[in-house]
Amino acid sequence: MHIDARLRWTYCVPMKIATVRDLRNDFRTLEAWLAEGETIQIEKRGTPVALLTPMHSSSLAAPPTARPDAAARRRAIWGGRCFSAEEVKAMREYELEDEEG
Image 1: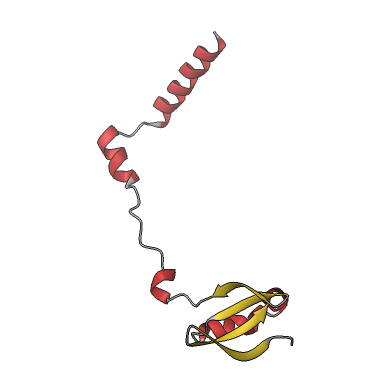
Image 2: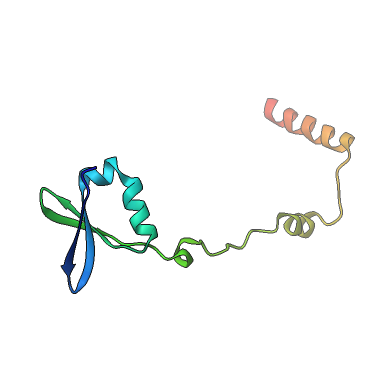
């Protein structure tokens, strides 16, 4: 494993360092560090390019979205009306007649 586990002091906060290659090839270790609350500095050829910080579980959960009530909309449009099989067949035949001619 090539990950540099040294601690560096950046803005008075200890930080673990990993390379872009480590990010690509050994993400499990980085993921474990993130799960422990560590901030990781990503370097490419010795130059810092990014910071990985752990997300809080509350920010991962998507807010619940209101789902449309299809049944209520159907009742508002059609009421209690339901078509019989004969009525549906007649409507389809009528639509086909319109298309033909």
